[in-house]
Length: 315
Image (cartoon, rainbow, N blue to C red):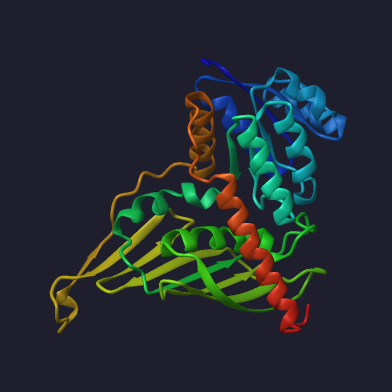
């Protein structure tokens, strides 16, 4: 399969970035975009020199692969039709709204020998890709993901909107399944939870504290990993991290700590993610973020939401 033909379903803010990147990836042809607003869709299609459709069933006929970038509530139904039509599929996070729906899509992709990738974009952040070689038996992990309220994201709360990135990344780095969790949160601007704090306890003893908010003035996305011989501080926005590592058994002063900022290849994470998707389609490989990983993150997010209800937080 030399030239991969791709269609983007949903060209809101993120969907347009999918379309833009596909037009820039060698060996890829953007065969069309789908938008329910035909006038708006025609304008976007002209921008990317492709065709506009209002019916995704028509749009996918000439495509080998599809990006689904629509509201979460539509992921399952559209994904099911795309996979049933024999098209490789990248579904933006969160995977679906129900675990049973995610499981059904995973089985459908497997049955039809199709690539199913979930859009957990932080897995392709340059800092995350680079630091993995330094992770050794982490004992404690902290993450903060804060941002301003965006009225465009009205179908889900901060857990499925923002925290789900960390609910995917942190178990991956911890190298273990979650044993139990605590969750507390409240709503501020929307009908869903806008601020949430979570503590995860893993079977291997690692503990993680997560904070997510969409009631912040600015954006702040940081991760800290603590392990027996080192501390790693990550800035997702700059795609940089700093490594603090013991140089001797006893730390008598800062001279006994080696501080370094490893070189990171800075590339747009979405570009890296879509290039990986195309490579998997072309080579028939399993993606880094499989449907199973997407299901695990969704399952954990839904458990967080359930715990919020159990604790009767003000949501």
